Each structure stands twice: as structure tokens, then as C-alpha cells.
Length: 156
Image 1 (spheres, rainbow, N blue to C red):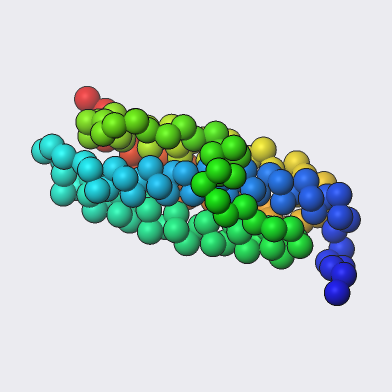
Image 2: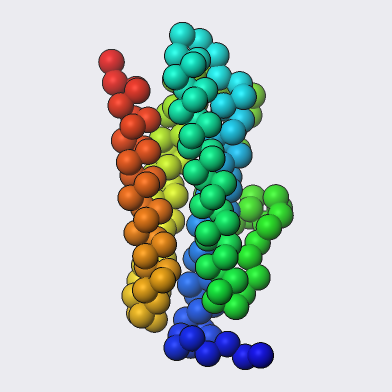
């Protein structure tokens, strides 16, 4: 059955393409955060271990919400590591950084997700896609807050 939600196919495709980048960034940040949760060491171990777990749990929920929005727009959601690597602006981490470097990398990742989410707004607004705009607003708020909290741990 053909989709008829009041958004033209070209607009839906542009939004879904942007959301695919957001999904890839979010999943990449999820994987990085989970990796750091497993491998963090040092005097802040307990604090960071718990904080990273809270963050990757939230990111796991977010990837589902973003993928489901792409599907609601009637496009396939990317779901492979190769697609995420191609679509994501978040680089992989080699080795195991120290705790402070982990925090700095996660700040950069959170801010990358914010920038990706912001980049989708013009297409969503042009198409009057309030559902996507609402999702983007929620994602931006959460990632900005998380970046601020992580950044505060880097203060001396």
C-alpha cells in the first residue's frame, strides 16, 4: 500500500537520508560508549563505569526511535556496521584510551550527534514534518546536556 502522510516522497527521502546519518552517529556513539564502559580504569572507575552505562542504555533506546522514524517515512533503516561506518561522522577508537581521553572523545561524539541532528532541521521544517522535528529536538537536548556533564569532568 502506498504511503500518504502529507509529506512528498522527495522530502521524505531527504529527511530519511539525514536520519540515516543520525542513526549511524548514534549507533557509533553507543558502541564507543559501551567499549569505554567495559575498559575504563583509574580513580574515577566507578563513577565513569556507571555514567557510561547510563549513557549507552539511553543510546540503545535512541537508535530504535530513529530507525523507526525512518521506517515511518517509508524508507529502509541502515543496520550494518559497513553502512554505519560509511554514514557516521564519529571515528572509531583504536586501543584503550585513558579515562580522561575517553571522556574527551565522548564529548566530541555527543557534539557530533548534535550537529548531525541540527543539519536535518531545514528539511523537516520545509516538509512540515513535526514528528521528525520533535525527535530531533529531544535528541539535541539530551546530547547537549550529556556533553555538558562530560565536559565538566574535564575541568581542572
